[in-house]
Image 1 (cartoon, rainbow, N blue to C red):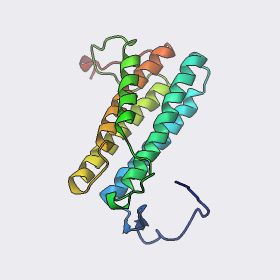
Image 2 (cartoon, helix red, strand yellow):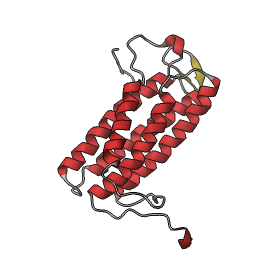
Image 3 (cartoon, rainbow, N blue to C red):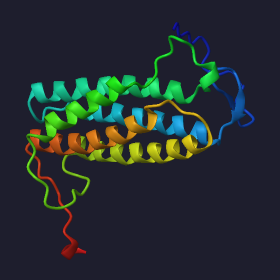
Image 4 (cartoon, rainbow, N blue to C red):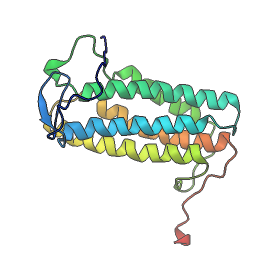
Length: 196
C-alpha cells in the first residue's frame, strides 16, 4: 500500500466531519473516530516514552531493548488505527491489520520480562522514574482505548484481534513500567492503604 501525504490541510474537516479510509464522511465525535483517535494518542505517548528512554539512566542494552519493543508497538498501533479507520467492506487486501502474531509477541514479551521482576504484594502506584511513569500513563490511555473499542465493537464490526491486542498491550505496558524501574534501579512505589 503506497502512502502519499502531499497536503497537510484539506479543509474537509472544518465543519465537524472527517473521512474514513474508504471515503465515507462521518462526524468527528463518533465512537469510531474516538477509538482510533485514542489509539493515536497512545502512540504519541509512546513517542514520549521513547524520548525519555534516551537518557543516561540504566544500561544501553536495556534502553535499546525497550526502544525496540516500543518501536514495534508504535508500528502495530498504526496498523490498528488504520484497521479501525476502515469499514470492513472497504479493507484493501494488502492493508495491514492486527493479527494473532502481534498478540503472541506481546504475550511472549510479557512472560519474558515479568519472569525477572519481584513478586508483587501490593498494587503499584504510577511513578518511579520518568520512563516508568510515562509507561504507566500509557497503560491508562491504552485501557481507555480498549473501553472505546469495546463500545465500537458492540455497534459495528472491528478487526478480530483489535480488543485482544489492546488488552494485552495494557498488560505489557504495566510490566514494562515495572521493568524500566528495576532496570534503572529506581524505587517502585506501592499502594499503602494505611497511608490514605
